Length: 526
Image (cartoon, rainbow, N blue to C red; front, side):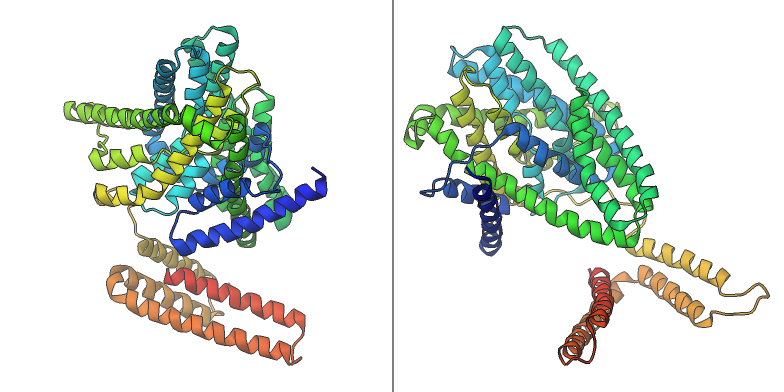
């Protein structure tokens, strides 16, 4: 394919992404479902060239920024608090699922070597960070379940990659050591964490000296790729390195970013991540054509592999349920004996956590990276795609109903202060500093209006924090008026510009002021 045609195809794919995302919004479907099925249908459009996906390139392009985004937005204090539960899912559940799937695959195909069965288990075991994000964006979960799923999706890829590499080597040599695999995982994870922390701290020092918003944003966008590639170059876990860097950057961004940098960077980053997540699901759908052609056609694939693929998918779901419920039982027993104060999830929480194991890009990339001539390669490819389709289309679309059925208990993890109380605390210290600076060295009041304004604001916010329920309707009505005033001012500004009464520079400056006022009103109303 010529480079210009490839570029045209990429632009067409992004146009299709916009159309499919809009269709999903109108139909009330998860966007991941529309993108995946839309990509699969586009793959069979007559005349469209076959899409050949380089798995290593897909991982390098998409995985680092998406992992960075997840690490950037995760609640670090809750991540530390629930690290044992996250490790249980990201390491224990992946290893357990890999073993169970390998055993079932060997029972179905006794002639398939154990190494190939283990490779299949490693490919389908880890839930995907991108798929999990796409599902969780549309549902509301208690914070504990949310952090468990987010933390698992950030860390479990490292477990899957280590198991996959050992399984492929075992299939080639006929030898496999579980102890060696576990030791290798801890070495790779520790090395990745060291690399990630070093890169993150270097980024903090660099940002303090750049002094230009656009340079800072560019350096931050490249950060995930730098950490991932450096980790892989040093033969440690690039996944853990990227996540560690993201956590360091997330912790320090509140102090090293200016307000302008944060607003501009967030806008750019949000659009980039949206396009990358959408492109991942579309590419997965487009790759269906290659998988079907390798299997001899859709009819042949379904006839010869349909039941085994279904058995693996069911095994995958059952294994996750078994691990989650068994772990919750252990917590329940330990709590009853007084060994821990951790609360069990309960039947509803464990069910939701089990049902949320959605697979995606890592599963596909690992399957496509199997060498030619690998035992059972066509079956592993077809099964991997079936697992992605099944989990995204079935679990992704029904998770909201499962949450409603589970009737999860009310949120118990609460911060010491509400948002209103935190605002009151900020307003009081702001008033305190203004009160100190409102007088000159001789004690003469030189900023009376500023002092009055901050005093009035602090008093109002403290009163609001104490009587929030009373003020919420009044607050909404207040900012509705502000938003209407902003819209009216914007129409007048455009009229003046169109009439030639003001120049472009005046338009840009005043429009920016209106934009900031509008964003402030929307944020306050929310």
